[in-house]
Image (cartoon, rainbow, N blue to C red; front, side, top):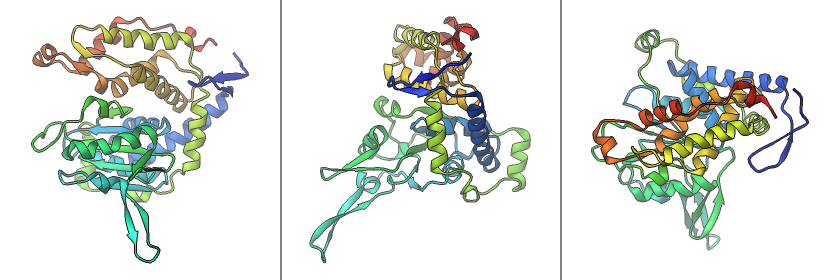
Length: 338
């Protein structure tokens, strides 16, 4: 079926995305993901999801046990897209101004000059974000949501594209500050690498076969990222898919084991991510399987369990899985119709 235009979430019309364009962009993203996978053992699919977040102007929370490559993945993502990147080690004594920058008085000009902090980079790696104080964590909120920071009443825009890749260890909680729900909601995805497979761990132990993250510089550039992002906005999303996403969200809002269900911001985030995921799979339209694949990374961290569910040992992923199983997905041909 052919069409002349497609609409994004703002209702603006775009020329329809062709299958050839979709395949070309999918090949580009596959190349970037393969480069990241060459530096991080067993991270091919996680790398693709991280690239989806970058293309969606989203942010990533890498949550996993120590030593599985969280920081290496973040550094590899930063290097592969060719933009500027900065790494910040979050500690209890880190101040908000250490992130945003400060105004410094110039004795020669007799004026204050703004010295930008590490947030002014395309990719910002926030290592062990839960070790910083809540005040410092809150300093990230404005820039993650609006792409700008405010220092002494003056607003400064950060580069575009811009992504925060934050890491945290969910096991070792001594001396950490839990991220509040309002800040968790600023992350498009929560990802986990998990333990590597047998062959991947052999490669790690041998110390061979893995590229250094800095060697990935130049795999892609910011212009390429912008082109793929613009193409993703032209991926078709049928009303049946919108309805499917809405039905899942509505089910979480009344679920007996959830204190907080999915917000409209969460449903919009999922649809945007599904468009991009469809594109990197070489498709010009979203299918229900895209929604199902992205539901856990995009939605699970936004849910809040009831005390009873926590005591019983259930997780947000468990409850979300039950909800997905209870909602009938539209047929594939309904997702393609325009």
